[in-house]
Image (cartoon, rainbow, N blue to C red; front, side, top):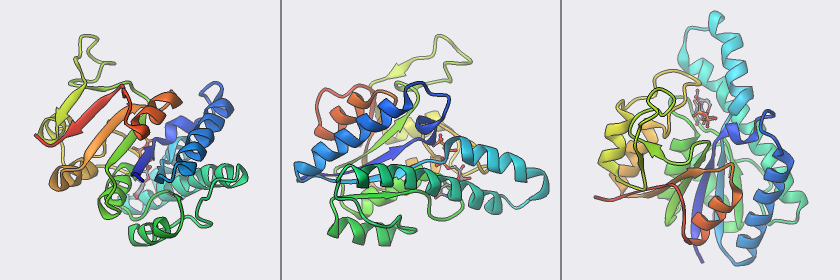
Length: 234
Ligand code: UTP
């Protein structure tokens, strides 16, 4: 029995992504298979488009970033509800509620095979939630499913010659991220710096991959020939 936590970037549920129903069906099928093999899986869903839209709408009227974070958290829970309901209807043994804290999530994962959640508190993103959930539940690793194939040393949109990495130490990842704090509500980075720091402190292995390709998530869960960037202890 393996325990794995998966952070699903909210962009993966965006309406712009073609074939999003096929993607969601593929996700449900992978989770159903793994649950039937007795794996325990925690899924932490990001806010994506509704988070960004809500934060942008309210920003001119709200100066406190933590109040804007709350809008983002509400969006993550909306997306988590979509994923939870899809799993539940497919007969996957998923917890009946969306936990609001790590402690609650850990307790639910003891009772259920699968737990789906969104954000917890202001001050970080769902990457950090997934990393804390992984550390607290004794998971073997945390999968960060995002919309880029690997971690690059620079943003490939700005530098087409940016170098992609298959393996990084935690320190190398922190160096690439560059900052160590949650800067603004709704601002996205390859991995949330708050989470990356906690992964480093706890020696937690991260698998960062392109979640648009469901097979990559599957391979990372079953520990196959996974494509993406593995971050591990130096
Ligand atoms: P996301 O986890 O979706 O962050 O939370 P992101 O990295 O911006 O988006 P993706 O995953 O790449 O799509 C959206 C926003 O919600 C707030 C933050 O403002 C975050 O930027 N949030 C989320 C929190 O404050 N706390 C949480 O636990 C989760």
